[in-house]
Length: 394
Image 1 (spheres, rainbow, N blue to C red):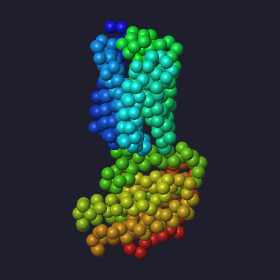
Image 2 (image 1 turned 120 degrees about the vertical axis):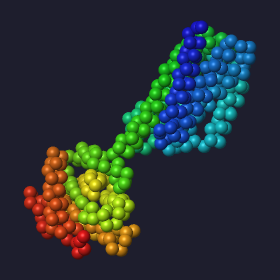
Image 3 (image 1 turned 90 degrees about the horizontal axis):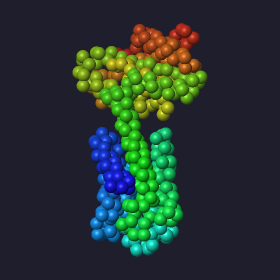
Image 4 (image 1 turned 90 degrees about the vertical axis):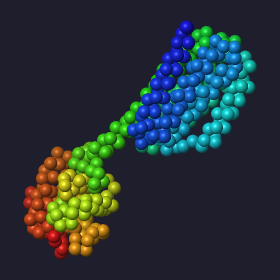
């Protein structure tokens, strides 16, 4: 076995392994279709290595040479379809089928041309380059790119351009006088070793993109309260820290709120109604809060809101509006009116976050001790009593 045959064997094994891994990843990823397309792409492309060996060691060189070309191109096109699913730019399958069919016909037409001529070499390599460069464009043009996406896009851009480099190399050093000679040429050794490196690099990067997505989903699930659909304490704290990192010295506001007499609701109306109250209040917070606000359910009936770049007066008005809307939550028995108490504090430096929480908590307990269904403001180490008080208290 020469070096080229060894690399063909390596490429086959690597591609099959990637196909299997993407199939497994598809069972956990929300981008399941993309993972399955990647699995199919690597699986089909793996057959090209077998076809290349059959070209060299059987008598039906032409059919196996066309098979090698077709399996690589189809595999790449399936990867492009998967990338379209992953990055939100799907490929029209009719265009893909037409392009693949036309390229296979082109490969058949140029098969008998002298190998290593510019026309033959660039006509053979160009379809591969077009598919991969289109994939690179899809990744690089996508919105909300992360570091892994930018790396993938640049890697695929390099991979696409390298096919033109391979065509130029074939013109310079030759790729054998006939297809059977290919496996015995230095050009084949360079081509297959480069392919092995790029297959691994692209496969690992695609895999990393999907695994990072799964990890983000798992973290999101671990940081979300399933009943209220709001972040839990850990998720809320992470969001707050992220907002503070963006504007550490801005004027922010912290609101802590507590559903009044929640234990009485559970005891009187049952835990099912109590769960509905949590769900309804969580939905109300989501619908009412500004887009950049951090929201969280930090305890049984305790909730927190962080309003970035918000003056304290505006935060109080928001808490007042939320308190009023809580009393009109729909879907409960007529005898049940849900109310909530609120404590509001200001935050001007990231280092003062703990103190802002403490002040908001003191204000909240003042609101509850004063009769509940109220908004209390913490200000200058004392509580501002000029706050709203609801007419209906539980």
